[in-house]
Amino acid sequence: TKVSLTGIKPTGEPHLGNLIGAIRPALKLAEQYDSLYFIADYHALTTVRDPELLRHYSRSVAATWMAVGLDPKRTTFYLQSDVPEVFELTWVLSCVTGKGLMNRAHAYKAARDRNIEAGEDPDAGVNMGLYNYPILMAVDILIMETDVVPVGKDQVQHVEYAADIAGSFNHLYGDAYSFKIPQAIVPDTGTGHTLPGLDGRKMSKSYDNTIPLFLPENKLKKLVRRIPTDSTPVEEPKDPDSSAVFQILEQFAPESAADVVADTRKRLEAGGMGWGELKNVLFEVLNTELAPLRERYEELMRPGSELDTALAEGAERARARASRVLGSVRGAIGIDR
Ligand code: TYM
Image 1: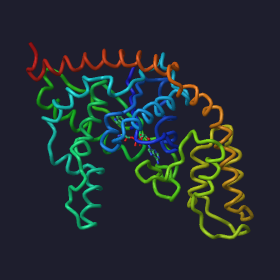
Image 2 (image 1 turned 90 degrees about the vertical axis):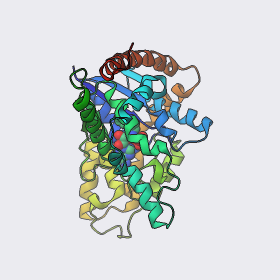
Image 3 (image 1 turned 30 degrees about the horizontal axis):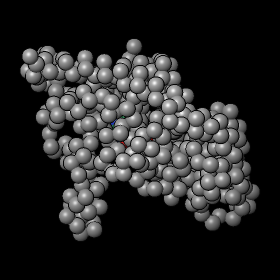
């Protein structure tokens, strides 16, 4: 069977974009693939400097995976930091990765462009963790012999980098050991491929515009009210596809709410449905689906919950796989006794 793997970085509470772009599609793959899911806690260290907060976010991401349906018995579920083999391979692969490739990485380039625009030193505030981020991510993928990586559109470049880096290694050492070349799978979420957030831009922890999955009901309602809309009057026809509220509804709604979505689209296009009513529909659909998951999430967040045993078992399985691959790599490069 082929291997699928994906990770989430614990830099904030998991949000709707993570659910739609990664968690749901990735969990679906467990039916056909040997599936691995992990919490990329060392990736989060490039931005999260508060240890309490990092602990909290890591647990929160883990609890989210399980609340949404991950079965830790049938899959491999672990914390990145529990697999030290990852860091050893990161050095090895750094040595076959061109610096120019890293210079072109989106996240690094975006940070530089922001600095240049602000008239600052281009590398101001850029740490080496941000710069090397794509190599660590390549290792997450390659060390588990991954075939496919279900991710949102914003992570596709990173998966291509992993394929590139694997290619460089294989070119040099392929007679002794070859990495599998991974491929991204991006869920088809209609028009945008990325879920818009509270300000209409991509929903992202770094823009602080997310709708976290497990907010208390009243907070969820408040956030939904904050999604921007234009000033088209209630009675006038509206274009559902250019509305962030409708996009979130359409992309989030489960099968069981398909008729609600279709009906809402018709009513917006015909005129007669206002943005306020649309927001009520979105809130209801979100809350109906999320309320039971929220309860499960709260349970899992309690210290000593089954989350801890699941992660401990997952760590063992993940390490066994990683050390097998690392052993082959060591042999291939000439660092073995
Ligand atoms: P992260 O934590 O930013 O996001 C986790 C997943 O959620 C997707 N996503 C979205 N999809 C659609 N619309 C959105 N608005 C949206 N926001 C986030 C992301 O595309 C991602 O799939 N570098 C990764 C974590 C990582 C990783 C890996 C992933 C580390 N190692 C190895 C896969 C394989 C990240 O920062 O994702």
